[in-house]
Length: 397
Image: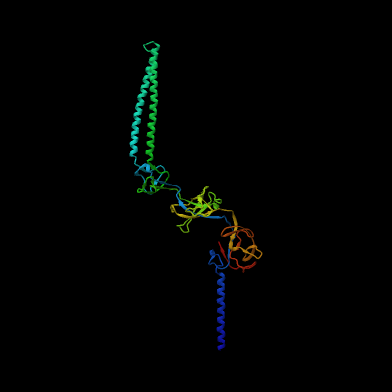
């Protein structure tokens, strides 16, 4: 009886040992067997071969900026600001006044210039009348000379000479009047310039009434205006990327302050001139012997949630033809170095030798061997073979 008991105990221990070994071997094989994307899915995975855009993408960084901006600095030669005409967050249009400098001194000079001009105009009028009067007298004397009426030709010549002198003086006075008016016009322009206006349509983001004044003006703006047009993105890219980029290529903009959110955009321009050797800037430089070039991206989606200065990462889609493609992990290689995939046809595996083409990080193009919509096994292993039946599988979109 005791012998039977020991035999039974040893049998149970043996079964448990075998089961434990099988469990750990199986677990070891499955760990890391699938791509992270399909983690947690068991069994055979299949996906329909489909046409995909395998065009290359370029990753760059940049910063959100307004379409335009205007920064107004104090100008030392204009003196002190007399009056501010806008407030922060005010919407302005191009030409709207922002502030005025003190024009008291200019007004005094302007009034003086106007008085001087008026005096010259009065003198000019007197000279015009004198010339007209002497002209009448000269005509009368010429008639009297013909009639021998107590007037000689010498008298006529003397009067004609006097008229010429008056006319010369009159021309000089006209020049004085022109100069006087030019002085007035210059003072008017100077006075007008003392009212600083907006050059763009936008929003006043800063009015700094306490800006520190220096001999050359100021080191920071008195007024800062940004365009109320949609924001854009600026950055720099390497010389290797510039040759691949063209205007209107699609861009995905991902602000770093928003997780899992994207804005659509397009490449607006890439400068023909470098930012500087080595790309030392805020947007991620190349370093070494790589030259960086500025570029600009127009954001086509609503930018109301974005703010000036946000840093973003961008994916520029270079585009490409649609090609038949499968995931990289579907591809296997036989002993002869031929690449192949397993295609599931009526629950039976078919081994297909394929020709590959262009690729991206996730998919590889197939030029020969399979057709669109055929089910390709995307997690093949060494246990699979031609003609193997697959009872169950999961189809991945």
